[in-house]
Amino acid sequence: MTEASAALENLPSSIPEGYQLRKEGKATILQQGNDVFFNPAQVVNRDLSVLVLQQFQQVRKEEGTLKAPGRKFKAKVAQQAEAQPDGLRVLEGLAASGLRSFRYALEVEGVRRVDANDMDADAVNNIRQNCAWNTSVAGKVVPTQGDARILMMQNELAYDAVDLDPYGSPNTLLDGAVQAVAEGGLLMITATDMAGQPLTRPPSPPHCMLHPLQVCP
Ligand SMILES: C[S@@+](CC[C@H](N)C(=O)[O-])C[C@H]1O[C@@H](n2cnc3c(N)ncnc32)[C@H](O)[C@@H]1O
Image (tube, rainbow, N blue to C red; front, side, top):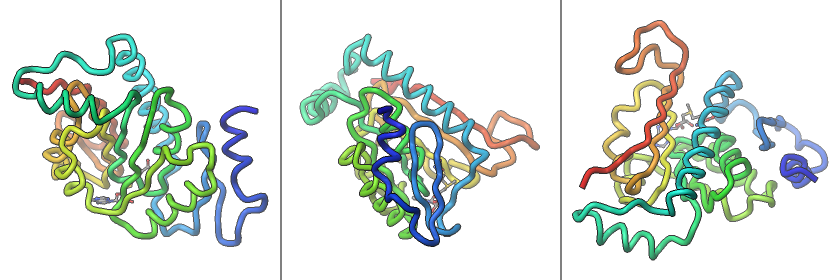
C-alpha cells in the first residue's frame, strides 16, 4: 500500500456531511464548508515547497545535521542539537487547512515534526480533525493555535524550516521568522493573493520565495 492510499484508508469510510475531500500530492484531508481558506491554484506553490524541503533535507543529510556554528551561536546551537533528535522540525506558521503540513509530513523523508499553526480556531479544529483521521502521520503534524509572530518570537532557533504563507505582504512576519529558524535553516515565504513582492513587478501571480538562510555569527 502506498503512503497516499494509506492516508486515504485512515479517513472515515464515508465523507461526513458538509465535508469535502481534498487530495493533493500524497495527502488527503477533509475540509468542512468554506470556512477555512483553501486555494487549489496554489498546488504549484505547495509542490515547489515540498521539492525544496526535500532538497534541503538531502543537503542536511549529506552535511550532517548541523553546520559548524559561529561563536556567538555555539552554545545555543549545541543546546538545540542536544534537545532535538535527528529529523527536521518544521513550522507552517499560517497553515489554514493544514494540507501543506500534511504534505511535508508525508512527502519529505526525515521530517520529525511539523507544527501546523493558525490563529483561526476553525482552521486549527480542521487540522486537529485531520490529524485524528490521518493516523499514518499521528504525532508528526502538531496543530497549534496562535499568532505566528508571537509563536516564532517565543521559539528562538527552534525550527529547521519555517514556512509562511500570509494573505498579502509577509513583512510583519519576517522578524519572528529569522528568530525562529535554526542556524543554517530554511525560510520559505509565499504571499498569497499579493500583487507584488519586493523586487517583483505587479501584476503577477502569487509568488514563492524560497530562501536558504545562513545566520551570521
Ligand atoms: C493564505 S492562508 C494559508 C494557506 C496555507 N498555507 C496553504 O498552503 O493552503 C493564510 C492563513 O493565515 C492565517 N493567519 C493570518 N494571520 C495570521 C497570524 N498572524 N498568525 C497565524 N495565522 C494567521 C489565516 O487565518 C489563514 O488561515
